[in-house]
Length: 324
Ligand code: ACO
Image (cartoon, rainbow, N blue to C red; front, side, top):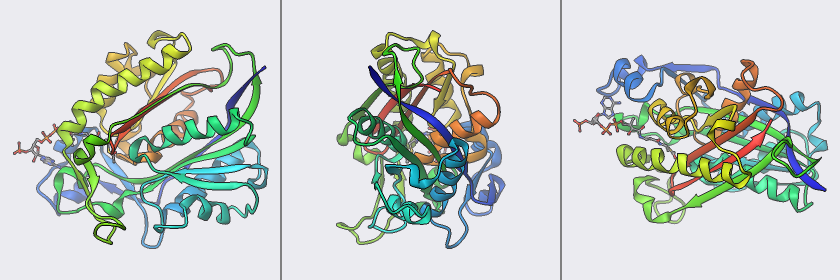
């Protein structure tokens, strides 16, 4: 008997305030045309004053639980992938747990920046396969607007706030790639690339939250190379290749990275879920947001083979292959 972690529900939440590219033209030397041409981003959402990462995460969680037809008390665990938790501690996950009115089970955060949702899904899968949990809520939630330097045109135009969530449930499978659920995961980190993408503050250094710093063109180069590699690697683990993929649901950082990766995987853009134009880069939230939007648009259907892939600060990168 093979146990699989199957997606039972998906949901997302975006803060009310929509920020078009034109808003940045007044603050830094940039233009709507530059941002669209170099990134594909047209707008993003920013959280309201007082609206926190756990607020966004709890709203996405409620939507995913409703989609699954479950209550929070049905869950064994909550994992939140985030780099922008409400407080240094406790975790955003325990705050979401409290907001959902769940007092059993366990909750913790995973921090792998933009690759956070991939790492959290892999952790949830391991908890389910080892029998430590039957039902796990995996959330990606971020308020990156709080760590942006609004004087730095090379970074402030790229990011947005939001949250997405999936409910995974242990389900019996046959052990073949026809099973629904997570089929393979592939994770990597290389901390020697710390300087390419980091936040210049923290508890044990400056005592401040700091601001995001990025050597964008270097990250771009690594992204194009490493994302296709990891996607191929996780597909190969289950004897599949790009031709078997119904949907790539990539980390939504930059349309040029998304299309270059799809091209390397020999998957046409018609089979890629793209939301970057509306959300910007929401870091760990971008993949669950895209899964939820992709399902709502009628793109993702039960039985579809999906590859998700992401890279972020660390560098950390990886992929998950699942059948919806
Ligand atoms: N408006 C106008 N000009 C700009 C802007 C802007 N908003 N930002 C940068 N420029 C300028 C630069 O100053 C530079 O000018 P110069 O030639 O006079 O020095 C020029 O544009 C080219 O800069 P590059 O950085 O080489 O531009 P590039 O084509 O690489 O695009 C970008 C920049 C969009 C950041 C791209 O490199 C990128 O998307 N990188 C990857 C980001 C990413 O994927 N991050 C994912 C992980 S994020 C995470 O983990 C938190």
